[in-house]
Length: 171
Image 1 (cartoon, rainbow, N blue to C red):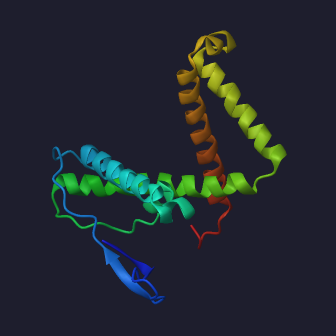
Image 2: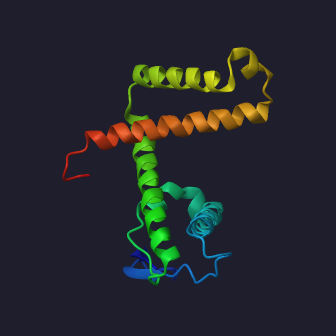
């Protein structure tokens, strides 16, 4: 369940009240924690896409990483797969929090510092492919996949740096 303050949906009513929303009950494809995590990730991702396609979402879009970064717990039983799922969720949300910090940090970092980070990351990306000759032979779609991975690495790096800059109390 999600608990938050929300405006009334009744026309002319401007009150804000505490509400809760239930994401529903679903049956996993199997009892493997990784499968269950993947299903949760896909469900939340689909909700974000649906919301962002709505008029409210177009004017105030949400980032799926921000949704996951706000996760504080979930309800389950004490079965082994649920204990494993809890551990996977903790790791996954930590990465999402790192991405959120990185996405903010990329807006705050100086252009010179960002240029250095992007250049270093691009060098790593091209080296991973096998060099500039092989990079130039990749299709547009393959290059876009590598670029997306490089962007994610930049965001994670900036997010980690931002985390390390936090005080011990803030961590």
